[in-house]
Length: 161
Image (cartoon, rainbow, N blue to C red; front, side, top):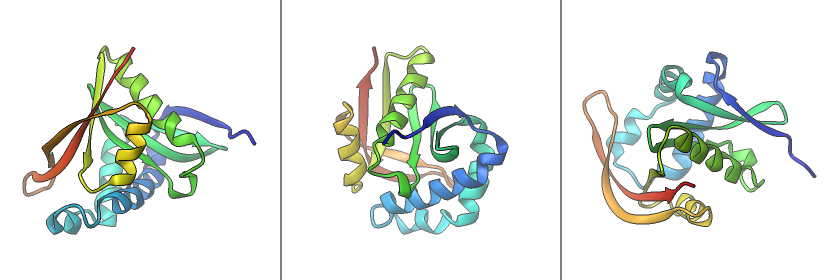
């Protein structure tokens, strides 16, 4: 069976779907691995506001005519990579990270990087299977209205050709 996929820049009317994918995916990968202070501020409303604010930074994956995932790339950092739960295991996640890599390369960078919360074994395995290399632990500053919240993350890098 062939899956019809394509990428496009996100539109403001995609913000609600982006927020839903982001909220569910964030919970799946972060709950139990991040400080409770961060969990408390990552409400449904916060994801909706962040999605509306960042929609212009997003590239969406369209599967069979509907938004199935998104990436946000800033300079050489792949900031966000999220795929809707119902599409996990379908093979389209590799296309999603490849699009993020393409965007970093298109920006003129020879290497991409991203942070993965230390306890998120599923994501870490995914990046490793897609050629990303773990450079070790570092503290990532998660944005919060009261100031950054440090998260223990693994820094993954990938050379781009």
